[in-house]
Length: 257
Image (cartoon, rainbow, N blue to C red; front, top):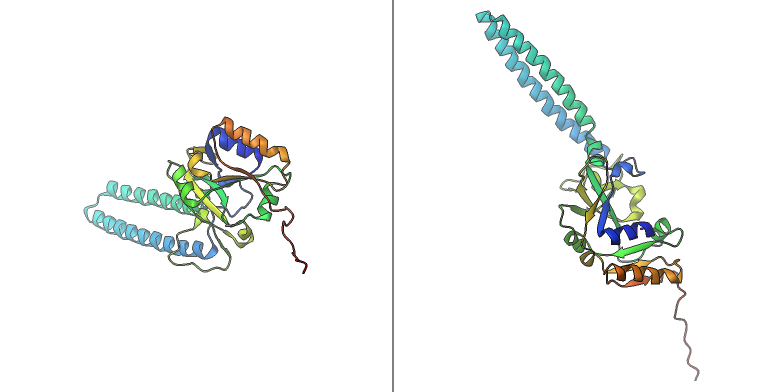
């Protein structure tokens, strides 16, 4: 994260869950082509079965009403038919917009999952040398937030050609295109209080944070500044300047005979 986001994190003692509708990736919250096709097939069959049942029921009712010559009741049945037709159109429209719902209703907090530092991540989030990374684990992330969240690794796939992986639950906000695979993203998601608007979620930083890492390009005084800030906020965590770009401290050793 950049310095501004870190200051927000430690002063508010909360993680910010962004609304993915504001992300650059237009596929956020979307499903693969094969998933959409499967959903469409299931939905269409269910809708057709529902319409067939309704039509048969209405036909039987009208036939029975004709026998007793109840024109008023017959008109009510026809009105019911028109009403259900309108409802089915609304259901279809809602289904077609379903892929956008998760991008509006849920907030996302993003992490990079790896055993090692990533030079690419430092470049993306620390171009000015002001970047900061906090180290944690998936268990600590879950334990640090009392609100109901869902966490998991992002699955990277070919949205146009990949077949449905049976038994896989990480769809929607937990899948992205392979073009983003370098991110090795791990996510937490939460239901937003207001659609389309991200929110700050209280977090126990003492549980969440193991270490605080500074960009390998950070100036020497930055460490002192961050340590002083953490001290004032009673956050007692190690502040470490990344050694990613430090010169090797070992070489060939020769002992003369």
